Each structure stands twice: as C-alpha cells, then as structure tokens.
Image 1 (tube, one colour):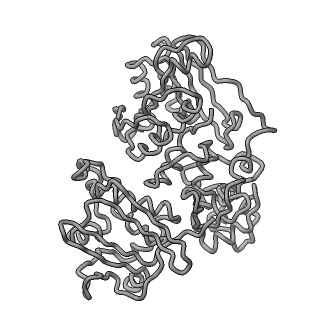
Image 2 (cartoon, helix red, strand yellow; image 1 turned 135 degrees about the vertical axis):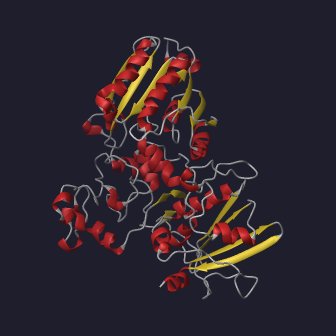
Image 3 (cartoon, helix red, strand yellow; image 1 turned 180 degrees about the vertical axis):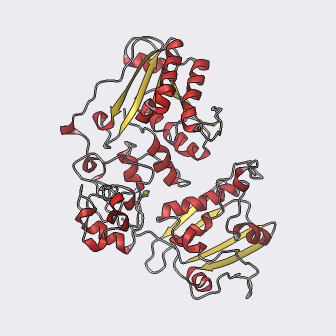
Length: 478
C-alpha cells in the first residue's frame, strides 16, 4: 500500500509525496523494489519474526510484528485465501492512495472467482480505479518463467502497469543472472558468501546429474539410473524432475524446494549440483547483495520469497573434525558422564543425517538455539585448516544447568512451544521472545555436517561439557 496524497505531476514529485507500508511482506522483496525506485518506506508489517532481520537490514525501515489479519481456522476455509478479505478490510479502514497486490493466478478462479471478484468490488465501492492482469515475469526482466496476478488500484484516476520492456529474444537468461558466480561443488559453501551453498548429493544422484543435459530430462540417463517413480506409468510425464536448467533461457519457476536436485528442474546448467540458495534468490530477482538471516535462511529464501514477488521494478564446507575415540557422551571434567540422551532407535538417521544438507542451514538451527537462550550476540568461527576443519559457535545466552542439559537439550523432541501448539508458547525469560525452536530436533542437524560435536555451557556457576560422536552413536543404535 502507498499512502499520503499522490501528486499527478512528475515522478520525483510523486516519490516525495508518497510513502510505503508493506503488509504480509515476507522478506521484503517488493518493499525493496519501492526503495530502489526512491520511495520512502515507513514500515513492514508481518507476523513472522524471522522476517525482521532481512526486512530491516535491506530496506532501512522498521519491522512491526503484528497479526493484522483475523482469519479463522475452519477446516474448509483456507486462511491463505482469507487474507485477501483481510487485505480488503485494511484498505477500507486506512484508504491508502494507491494499492498494489500480487498473487497466484489461480486466485481468479478460487470459489468460482468469488474471492477475487469481491475484492475488486470492495475497491471500486471505495472509489478506487482498479487494473489487474496476469503478468509473465520475463517480460519485466525477471530471469524466471513465472506468471503472477498483479493488481493496481488508485483513488486518483486511471492506473495500470507499464508495458513490458523485454521480448522473448532478449529475456534475461540463467547465464546472465548467475553465470558469473563462483563454481561450487555439491555440499559446499563459498567462503565469501555463506548463502552461495549447495545441497549434498548422494552417489546415485551424482551419477544422474552427470548424465543430465541442460534443458534435458531423465530420459537422457542410462536405464539403470532411472528412478522407480519414472518407471511407473503415472510418473513418466514428470520430465522436469531431476532436470538441469538451460543456460540461455529464463529459469523454470522457483518453488519452495528449489535447492533439491530431485524437486524439479533445479540442477545447475553445467556444475554437478542443484542451484545454491543465493542463485535461487537471484533468479527471483533479488540483488546479489541482498542479506538474508542465517536463522531460517532456507525458509527465508525458498519459502517466503518463493511464494511471492521479489524486487524487480568455492570452498569445501567446513565441519568439526573427528576427535580420538570417545564414549557417546563425555563429560570433559569427569571420567563417567552424568548425561544421557533420550533417543529412539534410528531417529538419528531420519532426523539428523537427513535433516539438512548444507552448512548454512545447520548453522541456522544453532543460531536459533542462541535466540531461544536470550543471546544478544552469536560468534561463528570457521577454520579451514586441512585435516583440522572445524566450526566454533559461541553465544552470550543464559546457558544450561546439568538438569537443563538432560531434561531439555538432550531430550529429542522437547517442545518449548507446547504440545501441538495448543497452549500459549512459553516466552524466553529475559527478552520475552517467542522461541524459534518448535520440534526439538534441530540439534540433530549438526550430525549432517560433523562427526563430533562438543558442547560447553555454564549457568548459575555450574559448568557442563560433553562430547557426542556420530560413529559411537551409530554403533550403539545397531
């Protein structure tokens, strides 16, 4: 929404008079587009605290955590579509001069078009001139084959989106968008940009991507590499799955799982990996220097921006190195460990090794723990020394007593946010934060990048330390 009276004169006058408030904004991509064009941004309003850092850092405007929507949770009343009605309510109450909205084209047909039709009627009854259309993003310089429903409304006369500036012969391609980024191997992260990181690939998928051709399909593979789902009649039509992008075309639609090679045509055009988080952001038209928080980084880029519009108007992943053989849990200040983890058989494989596949996503879980501990600072040191690679994470949170370690940290599945979220979340003691941790399994993600994890903590004068070794845990499980 754009507020303040909008002058009908030149662009500079309009920008000087107008101000922007963005609601339901995710990581702030659309807001950033207004900022680039010179509009002052008043604030952004969203319910997701994880959006605060990228919004404020990139847009020089305050984040307001406020649930402005009053949506129900009725089984047959999808809250996602109720937000359209809530947006209409806000417009009627605030009466901004200009309104902009983008959404998926299927909104036009939802409930036989009644939801979108009611929204347009509400705007017109409030005196707005309304324009809307389905826009093909490459026509406007986005290097991604994607269509979006765009709506503009003004209280000051006719309004419409400018004519497309690009035609098929001059679309921005994958090569032009990400072709100059440093090469990267699967499972690795670029030293200069932690968001330029790629998911790991199994040996089987490495073989598959090596046979994959840019713009090709799984039919290019030897028969022994074809997946079971593609062998079945129902799966033979999914040609894009396990596909590579083509250099000289816009990318396919970037969906929420773009970082996985098997989730669509998300293979890099020539490198044997899926596209990185940074590449996915750039293909959505975020600037190369757009900052995302390491906390929930994958969600921030693939979830929030993957479901909305963005801005447009090589080093090996380091991990803590193994230490000499040790018991499963070792207290560094005693021979016998007082700590025991409550762990079901095989849960490590399901929720640890396979939980995440790259270093930044794992680090986001550690930083989230620091947030829940009321930390104000987190320090991450990465040591690339060959043969002694390690990551050291320190924070100034409240720490843990031995009881906390056993009853909370080492209890896999411990929930601070209440069983099935049926009770009010337990806020942190000092800053009254809503906890980031939900399911109590993020700690296991460390085993997807390291074989040995050492924890040291102090609280109320009580010091605790223990070490967890992956090989020993596996042996114990067997």
